[in-house]
Amino acid sequence: MSLDLSPADLAFRDEVRAFLDAELTEDLRLAGHLCAGVYCDRPPAQKWLSILNRRGWAVPNWPVEYGGCDWSVVQRYIFASELVAADAPPVTPNATGMLGPVLIAFGTPEQKAAYLPRIPTGEDW
Image 1: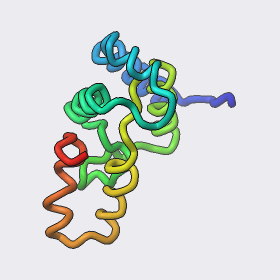
Image 2 (image 1 turned 90 degrees about the vertical axis):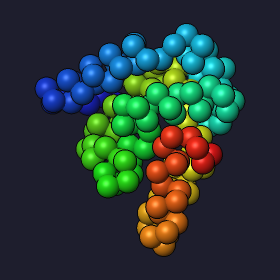
Image 3 (image 1 turned 45 degrees about the vertical axis):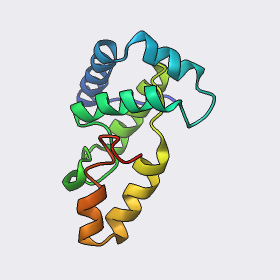
């Protein structure tokens, strides 16, 4: 697929690439390269989640009030594509992609307060 990216989207792509060049170590690239599915070994996946979280990019699809990024669909596509192209280890989708969104939609205030801050940090896996 060919996209005509706007100058802002190209700048965002360059920002993601610079982040990956700076933060994605060779051991993490190897772990991502060796991953045969959506689940990576826990130590490298948790290390990578921690790096993403420090940048504020651990749960980009969540609403901003819970740590998400408020990115456009194109930015989410760019981010996901660049992660794959760089051999970044996948972040386990259970908590970040499934449990978190369900808690956001249906959780009690107590459940949200207890779990949502701990998912992007990897404290709750």
